[in-house]
Length: 136
Image (cartoon, rainbow, N blue to C red):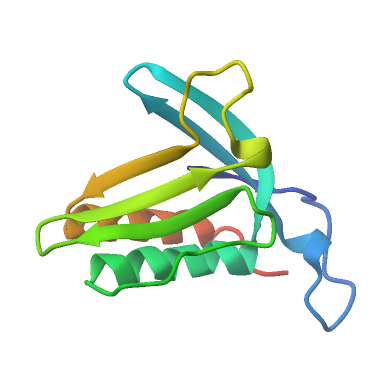
């Protein structure tokens, strides 16, 4: 997954409270499982949720047991299926605009088996990318 940018790039917060319209991020995802896959582009994460995803990934990499991570838009759910010192198994469920197309044979859930270091690297890369999109 990568961040394409803000859904509304020219928006700015018009109030002192959190402005959802100014903080939606357009997320690009490409999923390929043994040659069966799909892609999506959808404003499915708020800036604060994207920050929370980075913390979730980092916590899982450090050996924590974070609860399943849900977002306001229910397109993505991250869960921890299993963990050992050598492997962290992350479950990502895709739905709505982020799900496989109706005619696709692709599953709507992906299981990722990563070393703690690979997951920590993914968290670092996500946080670096997210730094260009602060909460507005």
